Length: 635
Picture 1 (tube, rainbow, N blue to C red):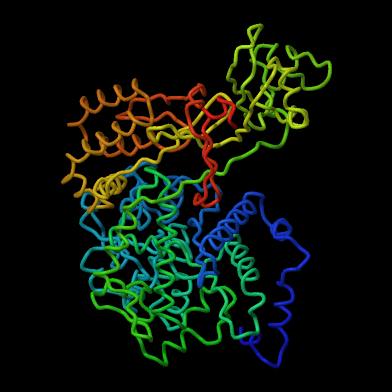
Picture 2 (picture 1 turned 90 degrees about the horizontal axis):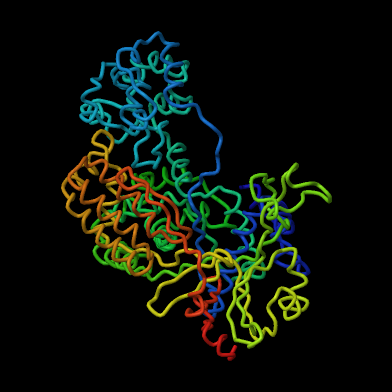
């Protein structure tokens, strides 16, 4: 980085030349030339369209653009079941623990139990035996303390007696512990019961200034490729002309989503993803707030997460010079203080008693635009799956003169989009409504001459029609919404809302485990009666929007039969119940172990009583078309 910023060298200028956009190259071409999958490029394009529309609405460029991405979850490689890996590892060190205390893969999902076996049933800091029946009395310790880094992986956790954890405090294991347990730890590492990373953490002895600086950077810096691409394009779009001038330009900020998660945990701002999609917008809001506060609190950290700013100093050396211990602590710890924090101009940028209630109010308002991108289907004419079980008259030959009864055939052709139209039916020329699907194969012919095409299909004298791509949104007078799934089916379009109190109960229901999550275990037991309030909200919403009367009856009956049963089953069942009202495609779910079949919406006749809503990419612009106007010939 020092070389890049050296005024006597040309690295910075060469980098700028290499990354500058060509004036003759469109943004679409720039994105198309990026490495990566079509899905990544689609995400980038949507992000840029959102930024463009927001700027058009507010009328000026923003000071900051904060990029919030979903958590990293890109690795999908298969891992060995925990039990198999434990069997191999414990066998290698000659342990009989699994014979004395048998277990299974399901039980090993509990963190304390899994750590117990990984450590061969011993305290990681003393080597003393642990009692499996008293695991809830022990503590899960973060080897590198959470005050320095938020690493909740198994690689940073050990199971220890409470008194040993209290002796360690907010530090890594002391030199005496390392010297006494190094042989034991190395034995576990050789047997692959702990990873080399975990061994390195355990034997660290002391956190150097360089270590602590690196932990800060890991908390801040987003490293995924899609984020870098979006940040680079935004930076070039808004700051290319300002480079070399006194203009500050637009700061493109990329932060790790884990900071938002940490903020939520600190202040009890719980979310349950299965309720509705609003948590995406809420996380983006929190990320923007956190970014602004961090820039005020630690202005010298800006080069770590503001795109295009180069680090011109050593984070470790900076701390040594200023001797600020809290600079190395978890960077959000200051938010817990009751004292107000001011910037250089005396403006308060964080005061817990003032800002936290405002944040909670925003998250509780649910003023969120849910926009589903409408899609005109593209690609092959038919689904590629060869079908031999359909009736022969419904199958399409795979090749010319290939008998479908011998070789099978393709099923239904792929529908590009649906159309709703009005035509004259029969000898009486009766005005009639219809909805049909236009296949990809037929698309060109339809678009060339819609009236003639439909006439040849048996729909003469078409007077009005409207194109309805997949996921077109339509709304009824009572506020009920549906997404068009095809020319024959629709999906749920209303987000289900619960109060903060009931969301908190469901959050703890997700973690109902006495050994691993004592706090959640106690909370659910204390608020058990509130599950009936959740049921009331679910059924009231379903009666208005979901419209599945038979399933409502099944759910009510099952609750009455099981409401005094096992608490873990109640907690699990109510989490599964959220699928009933979930926005999008209906799906089967279980409630108290009984499968509740999905309610499909396979009639689109009601669409003629609805209003079609065309949304812009942000949902801040809308065009509404009453289907009744189409019928009346006013469209």
